[in-house]
Amino acid sequence: MKFFIDTANLAQIKEAHELGVLDGVTTNPSLMAKEGITGEENVKAHYKAICEITDGDVSAEVIATTYDEMIKEGLELAKLHERIVVKVPMIKDGVRAIKYFSKQGIKTNCTLVFSAGQALLAAKAGATYVSPFIGRLDDISTDGLQLIEDIRLIYDNYGYETQILAASVRHAMHIINCAKIGSDVITGPLSAMLSLLKHPLTDNGLAQFLADHAKAAEAGK
Ligand code: G3P
Image 1 (cartoon, helix red, strand yellow):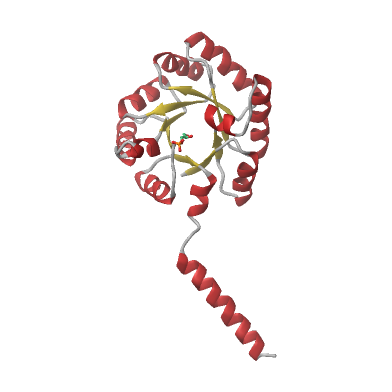
Image 2 (cartoon, helix red, strand yellow):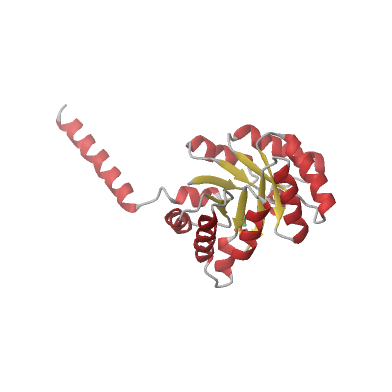
């Protein structure tokens, strides 16, 4: 399963990259705004800076919501770097745009997906990735992981190559359950990735090993 980090924060992207387990980056307009990145040229420069850190795909979201504008914006984004994936919302014009980009050999990530039907449409349009937002479904008392299971079943039934990119991942159990279901990718904040490290028995065990080593070294003097 691929690990993407869901942020536009360069320091966090570097930290995840240096851990050696980062496969790509996803961003969205809210995450860019959170880092204070505004203005077309600054946004483009920021995407390029992200592409220089990671070796994996970098999702850059279009702001446009009409077909012609999405195509124009998506083509400009795709030109920025070979690792850019054009992120397109799950709306009618978005599905058309994904089909267009897919015919041009441009990678896409269909975002804001909340149902299996939307995921089916994204795959039929040829999306490279589909992003179901599991945390936001959980937020409204709907089972986000069940959606990942449903999409996995549908894609496997027909051999769709669209990769399931579980998004809005918030914590370790989301990641572990996505891996059990067979999600192709997860994306979440650095904190979710780092939470996989944590176990009290690891901390206790290490403290004991080091204490025993120090005691034996002292006795051997
Ligand atoms: O990738 C989608 C993500 O940015 C949404 O996450 O935590 O805002 O629901 P969240």
